[in-house]
Length: 61
Image 1 (cartoon, rainbow, N blue to C red):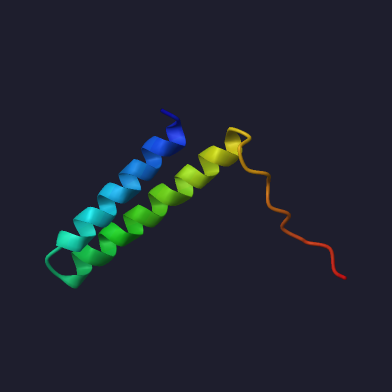
Image 2 (cartoon, rainbow, N blue to C red; image 1 turned 180 degrees about the vertical axis):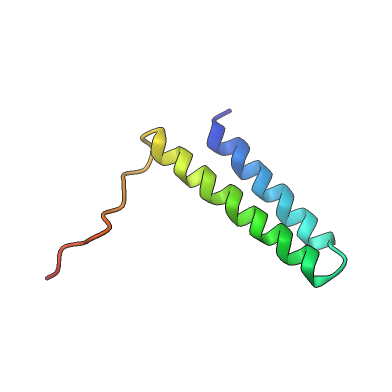
């Protein structure tokens, strides 16, 4: 299993925890954690060469 798949699995777990969270603060915390895991997974895909880098300054037409 790829590292990014494991990271996305963590994100899914956080979303499941968010669904069962009691209270808004816990819900928001789990959603933020899921976003963090997803960002790490996206970064890992980039590091593994599976996604091209994003051009921060796209050419104007």
